[in-house]
Image (cartoon, rainbow, N blue to C red; front, top):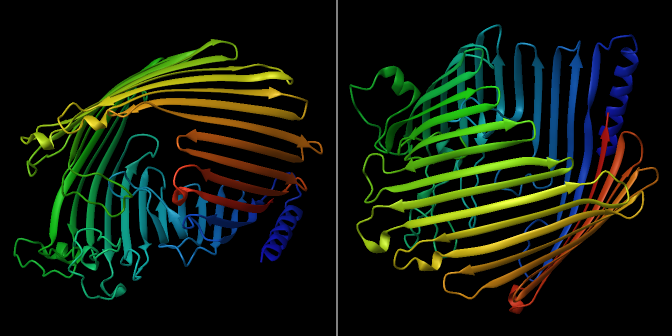
Length: 551
């Protein structure tokens, strides 16, 4: 299959080149095609990956008249049927000056509160003629999975759209609509094990079917982005409301107060709830100084099944500033966050964070940096055993020096970090941590084509009342170029010592460029863990081969 597809790519590339041999190219076909294979073995522990893996991938772009482009991305993997969700991918992505379309597997973003980071198998269309914007999306985000020992998931489909006015990179207003629904018949009902907590995982690490319910979600959002005073001021705000049904099998709610059009889109049930979220950010960007301020409110019942991760029940106020200099930068920011927004919990948790970063070029080839981060978490629990009063401090500084030479010392770096964290609440003293870590690295040119890299790191740490522990890491690497830089070889050995364990990791990698467009990469990695109980010791080896051709 690799030979066939490569031949087709070469033929298409040659054909398009021949047709566009004039002074201007009407069509241009470019991209990359390749194959990847891995053999893996673990002894002493259960395997982390399949014993063998194979993938074929194609990333290509067809450009017409410098204004229309079509992307075709393909990934075929032997892991496609064994993973929880599909790994094989095919994305047909044509683009033109005022629009874009996806057909296949893709990710897109509407807003951070509605759709962001979810992979969809289906289709989408985004039209942006002038100052108007219209987007449509529909597809599947999860396939149904049901095994005796693994987690279960329903087949989930998602549909949505966005309509807006204004410039994408300037001032604009968008309305977003999104629905997500689990298909009821995609998972068969199985008997419930009453010995397992219905909300979590049992002692045998299996998931109770009752905790996996078919859900339904409706999200509506309004987003405003304003660019003012010659784009020096940016004010972005989003208000979003969501309705979530935790179990579509629950009885519907009969109420005359629910409009008929809403019931056709989203069916309220006894397991349904609704909430809202609001975010706003103000940025002032001057020539050398920039200021930011933000506020975020995520209601405890707000859910969007189109977002990979969104923590509910939190309110955050943030602010920051940045000063830019020709030789460096200084940044200062902080945030204050609280939960228990509707007083449904016994205690309110407060999180604060303050950080500053300074980078400065002391001299040509000499850059320094320093950072300070202070964080804390407290609550007002009435019971002492439930109280939290955690504080953390981190100080970090680093130096890196580069030398314009081919032989001898070419780079030298030094980093130091101090961390201290504690919680004086009775019963939580074991959370105390104090550590010092330092890393020294260098690169030395031995010959015109051979470079040596060396790195060493030490970490001294104390946890609770335990005695101080010392961990050590040493790494040595060689990098060699040959055959007029067409062959690149590298070898690395890393030894990590933390009593009673010692790990040895070796990596050998080679890349050979057969032609200007065809290259081959081979890699072998081994890891050995020794010391301590024999049950913790293991040996791991992985070998990989990848062939790629650009066209």
